Length: 139
Image (cartoon, rainbow, N blue to C red; front, side):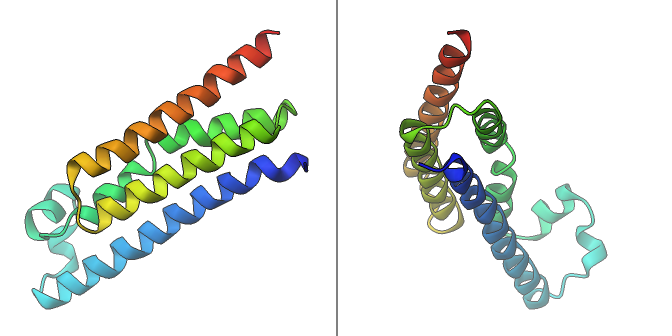
């Protein structure tokens, strides 16, 4: 297995951030045009939330800078310390898959209980990665 294999899930997570960002931009612009909202009228996030009805993609975009930040850090730590193996790579891909499912649910039908299951899956997968890193570094 290549030392770089652990970086591919990280790149896939970065791609997700950009995909959600594009979805957010397109929806915001479309809603602003449809309702004739001047860009300055939504200069602040509180204005955006009060004037634009569809907040699914912006909420999902913000979520990409919460739990995934710990993912970015641990992947870089794994890579830097040369700990990467098949188990780490599989856990990383599983975490990224959970984030894609979470973002899809968030940006589409947004059923909270479905979204929560995807979040919890990623939360525990990421926790497992961090626990294993802690164990591996302590040995």
